[in-house]
Length: 187
Image 1 (cartoon, one colour):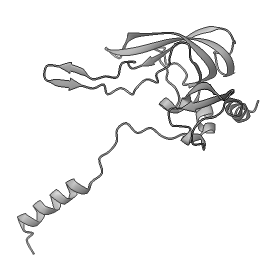
Image 2 (cartoon, rainbow, N blue to C red):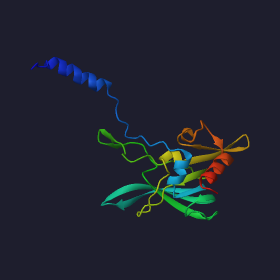
Image 3 (cartoon, rainbow, N blue to C red):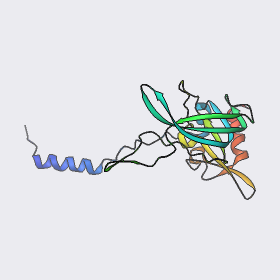
Image 4 (cartoon, one colour):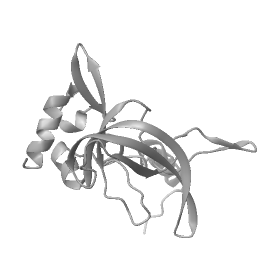
């Protein structure tokens, strides 16, 4: 039986460390429009009226939350179907994603970043069905949060993935996005 030299084992271990790709724990499954529509419990267009931080007690621990108060402007699917209604959606996670300084060390949250919705702005949201604790999030995190804005008198929509997950690169006309959602819903 041939013995392996310790130097060779050490060199192989170093090579493995240098050439192994790190796992990205922040990866999110890329979903196309039909998949997002299928996974969403609520799909609606809304204007943000208010945002506030808070906490929720779940599983014996306390988690930070962000609650948005929204006015439903157009509904597609789910329990937020009454247009003009004011609703609240609560995300797990903090709107403040900056690290916290503890002594000489910075502490970063392991929770996913909450999509940031600005007061007074319009969004098309594809939301998960709220949990028993009342928590939900946008489907695919930033993929299910489309910011709506006007450029050259045309309403456009852009999600946190730059619309790459829906086969576009950059903003799409809101009228096209809403028609595609209604088609995926069979409406």
